[in-house]
Image (cartoon, rainbow, N blue to C red; front, side):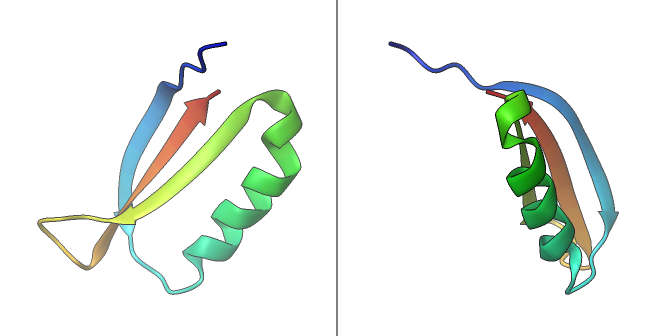
Length: 56
């Protein structure tokens, strides 16, 4: 069985050290709805984060 991950939305936001808590809560809460959330530091600007929503 093949699992395909679809990117629904990606935004750049100001980085905060607590952002991971929001992403973790979203992942735990909405996993059963086939949604997954990602957070990464922007490669070009370390003061920004990239927040992505996926459908699994």
